[in-house]
Amino acid sequence: MAIPFRPRPVAPELRSEAATRLDLAHRPRRNRKAEWARQLVREHTLTVSDLIWPIFVMDGSDARAPVASMPGVERLTVDEAARESERAARLGIPAIALFPYTDPALRTADGREALNGNNLICRALRAIKATVPDVGLITDVALDPYTSHGHDGLLSSDGRVLNDETVAVLIEQALVQADAGADVIAPSDMMDGRVGAIRRALDGAGHLDAQILAYSAKYASAFYGPFRDAVGSSGCLKGDKRTYQMDSANGTEALREAALDIEEGADMLMVKPGLPYLDIVYRLKETFGLPTFAYQVSGEYAMIEAAARNGWLDGEKAMLESLIAFKRAGADGVLTYFAPRIAEILAREG
Ligand code: PBG
Image 1: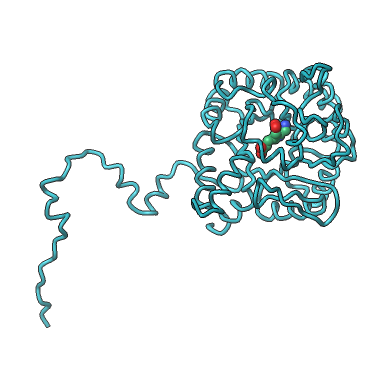
Image 2: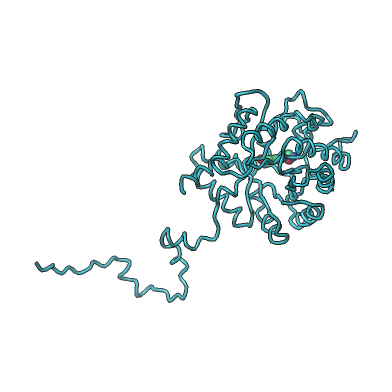
């Protein structure tokens, strides 16, 4: 049977095509025409190996407490943290960063609870190491979760944050953490000379393999607000941290800070906060080539999560887009409170 001839209908936009066609040598849209093509030309990928999961621990057992300014994030008792670390291991998240909510009764002007080998962080380190020995454990070195005034260091009688006296305490804090099983020591205090002092002390105590992840470029930032709620230091913080944390107007200064930390023995660098400081991530990675991490901090988490919960943006897409941005800027990995959710999405999507 003959198939009747039907002239092909011409779409209106094609009818005028000849008149409007641009004579282009390059049409970059060709490489975006289908998912397979986009996949083929994609420059960066986000994998579970890029994720470091920050966790807040608190006293007690079998309990979780929501952090009001970080919806979806909870403080965990040590046993719960160990359970969550099993989830991290199952998902393939390489490392966890631990932060303590210290009982206010234990906070003092000198932050001495930081040096207690049986403090919350040390108990959490031991419990998690015993549960998932192959997950890397990172601990913050800074006094703010332990001081009654909320600063990262010791104060002089006129309220200044003392540098060298603080470093002497931070050395002890690092040793206590390494003894309890910390794999990576992360000084987040921004005192001068602390990386070298901590390196010498770790080596002297035989912790030759304990890595130092230097918060080289840590800015005085409003984006830490929710974290300070989570560790309970916002209520007690007197003043601000601008005499030690960096001025957000400075970029080149971050290179000098990083150069010093590298000279002093840093194994890895960190930039913090994350998205507002992507230029710093890029410059540090380009200049030094060291493993460089970014911290997508509590305020960045809160912004995305709040908008998502209000239905103002697609939370999942925003999370993924924010994280690939770090990879594009050259980061080797990202500390993010989204880590377990991202790992689940990546596992689901294969
Ligand atoms: C402690 C410390 C802070 C953060 C990590 N370590 C707060 C601060 O410096 O005030 C912030 C992390 C976050 O906001 O998620 N020195």
